[in-house]
Image (cartoon, rainbow, N blue to C red):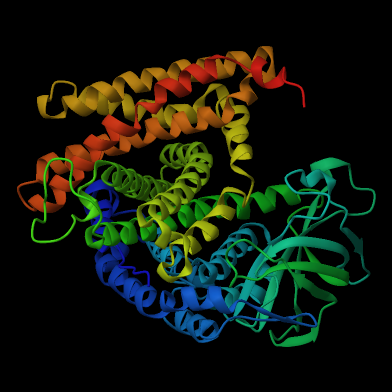
Length: 589
């Protein structure tokens, strides 16, 4: 049986040591959140360890029941969802005007990670509702917000986004769902959507579908897409539920993983919808939801990477196989535990370097989301938003790539036992795989970084990483204890500059050359960002190691491993990027 223990100590490290929270207590909601962060983390850990995690394997084995348009979730899920909502987790960051607690994302992101580690199939539904809330809160009319948001915030209703159609995946300009204006100001929505996570279930009494559709005579492509709110049950003026809308779940997708999460085929047969935002501006409103979702999908990869790592460590400390190459470590036993073997330790340290580095990056990104939304200084708000824009494709793609890799490394450590269901590791590999596809495949994230983010406003986004990294290097350049981190960080930051210049100049001459190296460029950028994160963590650990030697020395050791064994991949990535796209585009199939 797998195990999970929330990494509370590392969350505290990020909040108390890594993030500059103490310097920002005047920001709306920060002071209260700082004061209550420890009890909140402990309570969330208890929920995830004792309520959600025990349902993960059973939910995977039991799966979902589809019957004539209705979906029943596995045993215990409905009760767990009620517990989740009653505990106030659904309304954590939402506006108090609609019943929320108004707490910051930097604390919520830790809770989301725990939920993803404990039971990702469960966590998808409240995660999607959070995205729907963001889209409605920013783009809906006041009347719609007053009518729909309180129940969405409380968790009594859930929300989903409905983009994909059989002929339109990434290319949303190809969607065919229609929206016909009605005399009462509503719209009649007709069309089919696929891959709709949580499109139908029994956890909530109503489900709010945010549907992309085309108005009559709308421009072709993405410029002619509008966004509509299509509730499962219509809502009366007094807030009570009315008749069922003309939408239906026509079936469930039979998936590789996340078998307890309903991925639905939906049909809208003249369903009543309400316009959200401006006509033909639906992509702007939907991207509010999608950008938040991309961060949360990255957290899915991180969460599964963490639980895969924990189980890999536990197994490696217990499994007896072969003798250490440098002599018996357990002479009174017939073999040594596999944690003494260098290759097993290498795999474990790759996972640990990823999870602890990615956690700090994800929470730093969430911190900047809060600054962008809550700070009163326009320049700080803009700089914070620029950082988030730059990091979103990195958080989404790198964290999901490494989450899947971590699940596979843990399976490798478990050997044959990792491939069978008993230990639960194969489920993590199956569940993790879709995150690389969700919300724009990781190849799309690489193109977003390469063609949208790099050149935006003459490189304005890039300054929010390069400038802090350069300032950090200058600060510690003469610190002998930090030399083993600062020198390679400076060198690899220069490699990133070279790769960036190549990508920009190549893209101007021949876009295929830039696109051929885009995925490698995103990985290279991610590694240099993680090098900066790990150097910052090492600086903190060196300063505080006397206070808690075991914890801070482990931080320093992991930083050393990252710089010695992971960061060197940058040089081969740079070489591949600089080779251009000829070998890619010149091949015949």
